[in-house]
Length: 442
Image 1 (cartoon, one colour):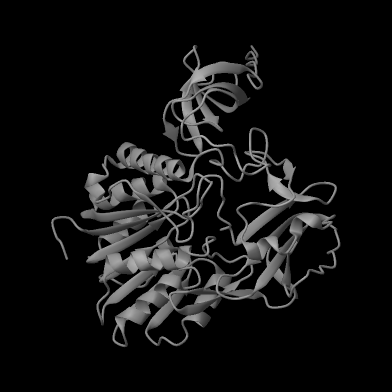
Image 2 (image 1 turned 30 degrees about the vertical axis):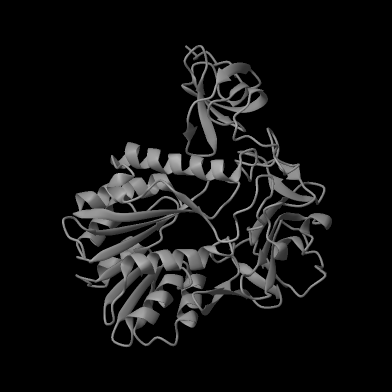
């Protein structure tokens, strides 16, 4: 007997009271039938009309947008971006909230994730609940910091560049992006015809004048002639191999952080906020307090940001091993760290390479894993190495909380936690947790 199809609730509207913030840029409400609504474009304590965007009858959870504000929060402002709002650009989650309220909401999310997934309170991790703004981001309500140095634009069927709508492949055409760094905006990506392209990524390096455009063509499309108002290198993503290939100019940009210049190959990872790299290096080094002659690991090391900072501080008798899976990032890291004789960079996944090194003990560990986190197996291995301190850099509080629970099982406690708002207007945060052996203060 064929199962009866469930009725879609998309478009249905509910008048609801908005409860607490949840991870992901939305708040929680409930329908009269008891279904949980994850509602965007609202704030805790508001009463709104919520229109369902995803879900069916019988589903436990539904997604929705607040399409009418009946009772507004004192933290609400009119979204300064003309492309923000229900059904519009999905890049920013909190355009409608005052800057201080955004940071407070992010702090509540971090605290909730730590408690729910690791059973840790802010006091347990040495955190006062503050989310620190990046330098230069302390702006009045209604003003938007231009912080995004890397913007990936989607291109619609007519060749117009825009940004994706929330949880959609549809393209929201824009005239400009308010959070784009000045170096990105000056390229004028939104004003050109990009017919035949699937996406266009614009990069404005920090600390140099390097600008780069990365083109991803649709199958069979020809690359456009890119003529911009300033020098810019142009790369393309290969149709078959997915690799990035030089069309014009350097195949990399030069980024500046911790007093050093770092080569970052096309498509390689670098922190998006211009102050992020320096902010995170400072937090990590202040937490680890490296000593001359120590041995350190830098895991998921990218182009060598933390490895270089460690090598500078550990001196000629110290040593650093970095592990990174990306081939191009490893090439860049080896180039960036060539002056340090006692720094070695290995390519491969951390969980595969680390056991093969034969390392049984280290003094310091830095790990900056991808959004999914390091995972139980890797954390168990790291816990066995006896490091006096570990710095965990995390872009996802849920993954951080899960891994901190694994570290606790391995005999480590959180000495301190710092949380930074390096992605204003969005729900994202960056955390730096410093761990040490339980029962020991070093």
